[in-house]
Length: 286
Ligand SMILES: Nc1ncnc2c1ncn2[C@@H]1O[C@H](COP(=O)(O)OP(=O)(O)OP(=O)(O)O)[C@@H](O)[C@H]1O
Ligand SMILES: [Mg+2]
Image 1 (tube, rainbow, N blue to C red):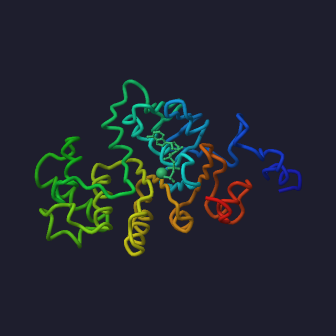
Image 2: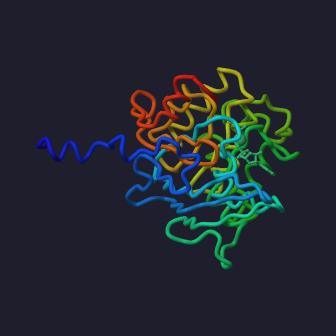
Image 3: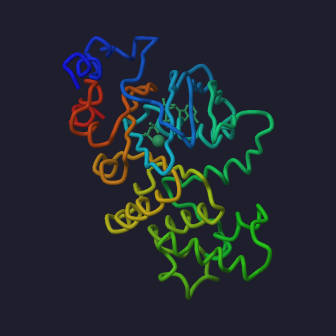
């Protein structure tokens, strides 16, 4: 590459607004789109009543990628991730503007079946939330709801396969009929992951999935994320920069409702372009 081409390919300081928070036309640093995206979001604004929580965010989720979302508390990570499977619909005062598509299909269109959407875009929460049912029934629940098995033996196979892929089968195969809530926290979180993958989602959203877990349970979930990314796209919100660095290929940095910067995880953590990203990853704030 000649010198001129190189100069053009580098983001220049001039392109980077130094005060994104007061710049209504702030443009995220880095490539917000990806080829052949699993999900696309364009110009998303979110309000809770009069208060705006997300400002003009555009960000694609790639196929089979693990996308980490990081940023200081209150910057809108949960709000944004909840837009992706219309979880914010359950909050009365929440209004969402913008364009969000799953495989090209507008998820906010009137024709979208929200129950089906939430099967295609599964979610794992911060606190493990198994249903007050047996281990087996937790995993079978969505399969039955969506009529995905024809008979009991097919259902048994789906449940076993999901528990295996969630790395939990060996620990629970002899207690399938006992309550899911009786498992340890880390096991409950893997049960919730099994419940999500039993219905073959396209994307799995995880909002701080390890923050209630000890380091060993956390390591298991991180290993699992790596394996799951062979089949699914994963968006993970995390407060642990080490975790983002370990599990993700791309990282998005949010600050006060704006998407400041997005890029390859190794670059974001070693050589970010924006001073706000740098301030956060070096621990100056957050
Ligand atoms: N249900 C709600 N009603 C009103 N305001 C809300 C609601 N949920 C979030 N907010 C506000 O929206 C903004 C973004 O919050 P959000 O929970 O998305 O941040 P976050 O980045 O996930 O923070 P944390 O890291 O602490 O989980 C905050 O100002 C918050 O107070
Ligand atoms: Mg949050």
